[in-house]
Amino acid sequence: MEPILNEAKKLYNEPMHTCEHILNQTLVRMFGCGRSVNAHIERKKSKCDYLLSEAPTEAQIAEITQKVNEVIDAHMPVFEELMSREEAAKIADLSKLPADASETLRVIRVGDYDACACIGQHVDNTSELGRFEIISHDFENDRWRVRFKLV
View 1 (cartoon, helix red, strand yellow):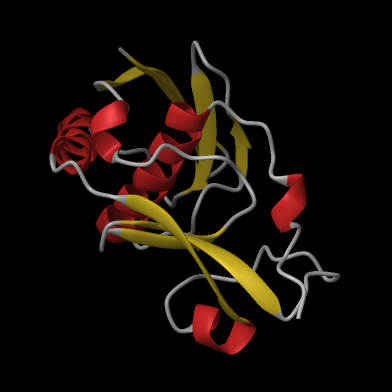
View 2 (tube, rainbow, N blue to C red; view 1 turned 120 degrees about the vertical axis):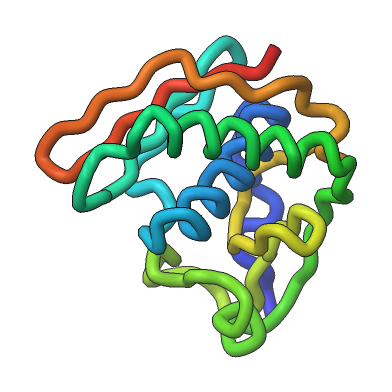
């Protein structure tokens, strides 16, 4: 069985991409939404779009920042596991999986906080990320866009 594009890992900035995983799981847990529907990950700043029925309040935005930084501060290991689609479906949302993905998937885990089928590059531990900050955000047509950085 061939792993999903294991040799062609996306060349995202490792810390920011790992932070995207943590942010995604935080939004899933807080709002019951899906992972980001669109993301642009860069070294200096990044953005993610989430489908929400209403804009998060300022208190909720502060809570997102706090929760993401708590995960970072927990110094969680970040590692990959190869597993069958069936196994992966038990722990990760596979709805964005390409139709031509193989039967064996590469799942990235951020400790026990997040699991996601992914071909991107990541840090080895959340302690490598720095501090998460939300730069700006806006809400339009049930889409919340958040821009963030690591300092």
